Image (tube, rainbow, N blue to C red; front, side, top):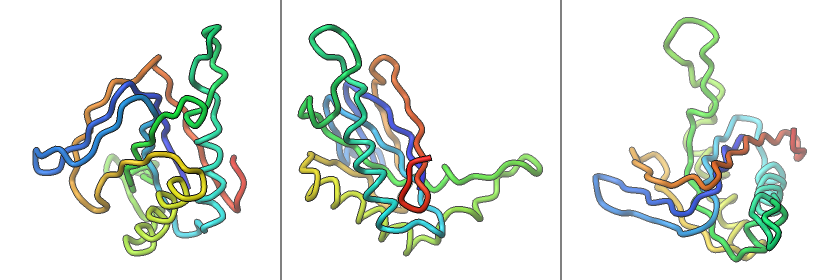
Amino acid sequence: MKAVVQRVINSELKIDNKKYSNIQNGLLVLLGVTHTDTKKDAEALAEKICKLRIFEDENDKMNLSVVDTAGSLHIVSQFTLYADSHHGNRPSFIKAAEPNFANELYEYFVSYCREKIGINVATGKFGEHMQINFINDGPVTIILECENGKIL
């Protein structure tokens, strides 16, 4: 499981040019699922993302998590994180999980963040063509990967 995590001032997602979801002050999480991912991977990655100390404290040090700041997550499924472009110029997506399996783990990840961690979560819509407008704060962007329940 892979995630691109961006600290944002705001993030708005549109489908068919209509606002679908948005957050203020939190993390935009682009989430990719591969064939071998498990619920354990989703849990470990969700915990890591929510505990990342990438928000400033009163001394302007990155020392607070999104949970500490009562921020939100904007979680969007993105199979293209598993693109393989080693050969030629057209990426292969064979490493991305098949849609039903990927959606199941994506939904599990979202529900884990909401129910177990207790954070406000907005989402995209799995399998849809989406447009995301956001303001990256910092900019701060972190790339994470989890395999066999361990952050790599």
